Length: 557
Ligand SMILES: C[S@@+](CC[C@H](N)C(=O)[O-])C[C@H]1O[C@@H](n2cnc3c(N)ncnc32)[C@H](O)[C@@H]1O
Image (cartoon, rainbow, N blue to C red):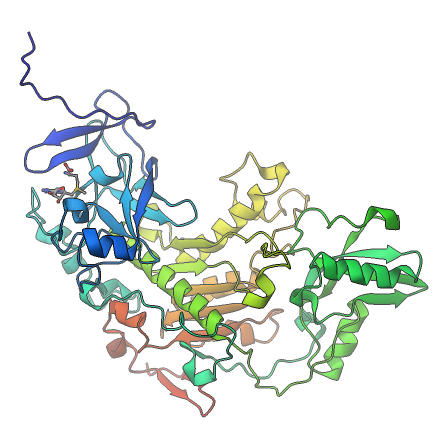
């Protein structure tokens, strides 16, 4: 007969068969079910929605919020609860709020090394738990809380498994980040560009990065970059004013096509430029029915204005283009708001590199955020966002776990973009895990237009990465038509964005992208304790009067 004092394990219904068990010294924990099959690596075993606490709520009732010990991106419980034990359970969300994981999320115990990684998903306000290796039946599932524990872990940490020891080899060949220690004390999530007028233009020296000065662009037909846009042929010239008015009304008069003229007259046909395909990926915007126009169709147009008379001639063949001559070395203007966006994106990239450490991978990550939109372009007259925000993508290096030498962070990120682009098409919907080449719509002759407006994956997008991309990654970025690459650490021996070579400036390549290096003294760099300088002493860098970074690629043997 069962006695009333017998204690049963707490119950929970989890679709992947995980159960809660109580173990001595640790309390409750999450375990793979002893009754069901082993769980393979890379399985999502739990998605926990989170409950948020604002800064003030937490200050009043939780911990001392701005304790130097609080850790963004990971478990926060480095400070004993001021009023409650909540702090042993909460995560610090990237925007600074504290998040309590519901479901099984709060019950994963700590292990070093862990067999489960977790990802904070800001788009769904949830935390996703994924196995990092095969899990045997009945095995405990643990995450990694960080290096500063507030309790003595059962089992302890063996010297061999101690991440701190593992990453202290300065000759790892990964540019310093793999000897990175996640230094909780120096972490701050204050975005230095968050305050002030978002539209204020910043001078070069105030930007959080230094731009690589590319030599003047050769003007060849190949350097005319193009995008696709919806156009419609107009049967009657008198309709032009009506259509122009309608474009303004429905907010299609966007800055994105501002470098192009609205109307093209060719061979007796008047054609009207309506919208970019980036804004309307699959179908054109619906035209006013009473005008009885023909169906719009996609047309290739220049991606930017003409900077020289030669470019003007080349571009106007495609579509009448604006002529905006500028000094050869003039760089794109950045606003405070855009710098804040970049700061956040680089912070997210570093976060992914730290996640990589926790997953036992090289701490290298890349991130393609949703492009920045100036506040004035964001909403239409009714305050409604002008278009659906594109997705953002982040991935870290997975060479170790996959034992695949090509799984670099940049390649993994581009692959995610490709998979996403592929899955937006009904043709490929049932192939979520499709190969990147299929996602580009090139595998069997069926061309699937991508959401960013062309059949290229990164047109008009910025890629942030912790490490300067290698030749392979730089080439992949070039093929994807990325707009710019911003990296944190130069890679003097392998980097192809200014170190051993600068791929987008090579003769014969048909696309250029801008390159910038994050300033080493910026707060984000100080998120990471690095001995990078020692390694890079043979690369000479200088900053000119315009704040532009020059990298001397002649490295001593
Ligand atoms: C997020 S909770 C995990 C669930 C917890 N075991 C429970 O029963 O509520 C964190 C707490 O679990 C305990 N814990 C987690 N990992 C542990 C480990 N490896 N050894 C001992 N205690 C552990 C510590 O008391 C810690 O404060």
